Image (cartoon, rainbow, N blue to C red; front, side):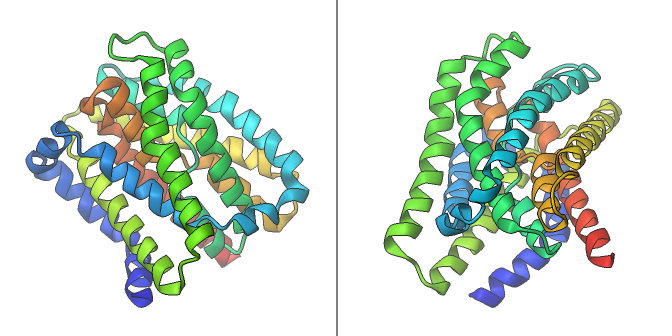
Length: 297
């Protein structure tokens, strides 16, 4: 099982491209699943698997950097929604709402693995991942309510939805690891489930991408957003020791497209999730490129 999970994770990037392409070219099955509410259960399963992978001991190990990480969390929490709002003005329609949700999304789950491959401090990345997830549950609804007026957006309802789909599965996975202490096989099964859920969610979200010229503007907007968040991550990481820098740069630069998709679906409907499938591909390509450059050096 461990070898299977390792191989699946090693092939994640080409699998993302293939699964995303299938969702775009043959969208009907995934759209039927989306209309039946398939995004939220898939997201909950992914978040549960993420919680199972979180080691509380490793989070405690970064207590010497807590002050700096709180600054990173505070700055990114304030700056990224503003950046996403500015970039979203480049597009119109439901795609604008999808881009907005990236500003309130937490750090990308895969960023922790990328930090490990790059030789950085994964505990720093994991701490930012966990903390940003808590912040998202609390402030996504109010922040989106301030940034956009949409009749389908109900901040309190979104808060309850995120608590059910994100906070509860994350806490359940973390508690299961702490109480049941699953062995290597159990953790490998969790990795396998998490990677599979990630690919299924990407397939569901990619089905909302529409092959028309207007999506070229969406792609440009997403690249601008990714460049801006990467610049912010670089600035926040520049004053840290070298081993800790990837653990700040990547989690700040890479926003979780899966949770953003859950927010967009709950707040604005499935049509708003279209840009997030494209963003998922871009952000994973970005992470792989940074890792390749870092290991080459």
